[in-house]
Image (tube, rainbow, N blue to C red):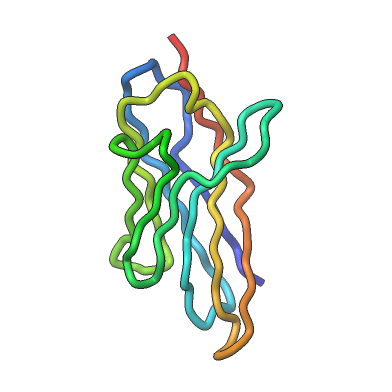
Length: 120
């Protein structure tokens, strides 16, 4: 069993900052990608940011320059620093981990999500 747990969501005003965290635990050989997705009411889930095992990052255009994804010293933990938040950032944010369960078999797991609400 692999568990993915997000934390750090909340209600903030426009222009404020939040930091989301994601931890992965369980029977994992190695993690190769960790990503943040979000889903706003009535919209499809979208990819927000990805960090590969090698440290490469990729962001959706709407968050470039405002959000930063990072892996901590424990490589099974990932953060998303969100600055200059806008009402359109309001969504449930999900952590996704892609990993090897052994030397050749890959799988992925999702967290249950954490709510981020940006409103005055």
